[in-house]
Length: 402
Ligand SMILES: [Mg+2]
Image 1 (cartoon, rainbow, N blue to C red):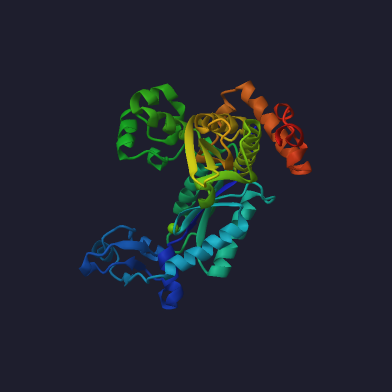
Image 2: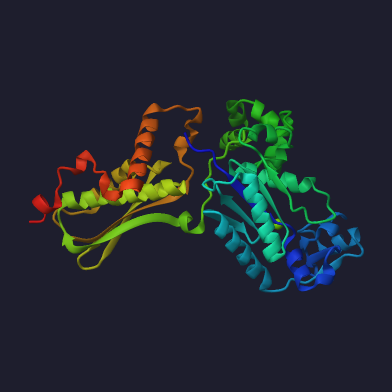
């Protein structure tokens, strides 16, 4: 079974205001709003907590903000500085966590599953570092998935008094996902917009717990596919992985032959090894992709790419290879020499097989068990330790290099 994940959501508190306060310390502790001037139809892009105390919110017209808080100090945006400060924050995050997915200039998801500390300790240390090294307040939510980590952070921040930046840390322990969500209003659930909220309210559903207690079928009949998503989220389930920018694009492996290869068995064996490498890297990153890519370069350096899509994302070597080999068969002309061959995986989403929590498919479980045993052996003894029986008929030095 999949390991329980440790996911953090980090959000800088009133980020633009915090940066402006660094540039001008006299602003500290005061009701300020960063944004456009009221006479220029300016809008609030960030409000300090003392200003929020008066009801000032981001995206509000500045003129309205001043009506709510007459002593509000309006600060114009300083160009350039926010991006630099944000970069410094992301560097600390990448220094702490193996997987960081920035969401915006002041928000990110982190996957810290492989770190030995418990999630609250990791959150605490990270917050201290950002407070001390960058003088920026920040709040963190922690849980077993992205949905709960972000929701925990939003709820935790809202519970703090408005007078100062919250610097909140809110952790939902494993197993408490559904009970944490249950009392919250349905609008708090990701994916529930004003329109679906109205539909749900008309059905008498007001809390996320109400949704969770309905049947999936009943929600699907009212809301279509969204109904299934909302129902699943209401149970506290979310299988999306944390994606770094690099990984979010694709994982690929390729090899350029020292001498061009025209032998089908050798090309297929190479394809198999490359597929294994791609699958293994995907599993290490907790990613599964539904798009398989094949790249071939002929001896005249012309390059050809083909891709195909699976119904469900995969991280299994055999599935990646099967599709890559099919693409190869479609484009390769017998005896045509190949200079370079490559396999890629893209179109990432959570591995569908994790849904096996309640949908028990023994066959897939066996494949997964075998797959992770192979990964462990290769980690210990190197890539060449394991050879498939299907590879054994092929011995490069005897049969094929004539
Ligand atoms: Mg923020």
